[in-house]
Length: 452
Image (cartoon, rainbow, N blue to C red):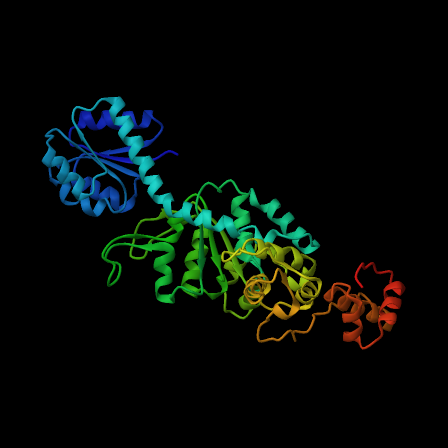
């Protein structure tokens, strides 16, 4: 990656040679001759590396080195080399210390090493988060349902582009996992995926967290801080629950999307936002924008490409696969190989899962504990939430004509049959009819089920 390097050297010939040499090794160099010129340049720009003489005509660079070294690596050059000077420079924050005259090979080696070390430090936290995320990122994609396949197709279609994506869906339905899948399948997957929960950061701190702040921007801002946009440089910034941000942040986020530029809190420099933005919400942003609670121009920028994560009750056939996945990948005792018996699987499928995949994971892990040393997890080991399995099924009774009673009967029967995974005795109990009548209705409507 081409780096921007600031050269601060009062000797004009050496300055010109260093700038020319940096440009020849496929980086971009800018040369200045005094501390004052460097200060002015740094007000409007943020180089990736500073190469500076220790002693300048208008001041000692070592005095300002501690502040500058917080923001970018610094290589110090000097014609007066000594162990004490080197120690002083390194204590002040210098990454490297070179004594003039400098050979081109040594200079190239030190510049490349300093840039690589800075990149490694920036990516250290990202690598740890990515390894942890990969352990869980596949859980949403487990299953064979039509609803899940549609989501996979949409991810495959949009991942390779840099298009902004809006992910819609209920809480716990796997919106962040979809965002991670988009990132992993994109050309940005070697860079950071930074997830931000817009609900958990205090409103007063959110702007600083997202955009960063300059030193002195507010009380307690004793040093410059880079925001999450910069943390996601070259990668993907995922803003979860985007409907919760206030109007001021909405306006600044819109500017990022439209211009690719932003400013830190208290800053005057326009910085480039080289990030792909993916957002998610469980709220109706279209309705919020009509009511004036969300900027309509931002909504239309976010909704360029949308993906809706299906609720778990819309993909019941995936529940056995997901349950097995959570048994195989739980992170506590594995002394006994466990599995669900048929009655437990039927109970899992018939429940309506208001908490979606997240709730299923919790129920499975609780059942593992409650079943103790027994290899089979039975229905009595399943403990659901406060809804007590009374969530009523949502029926789609949309017709392009006035339906007959037989059509209504068929839709309702198919819904109950799917809810209980074709288990005829459960269907019969719910509909208050005999199992013989259930079988008759299956035959009548040409439905296929292997359950009994």
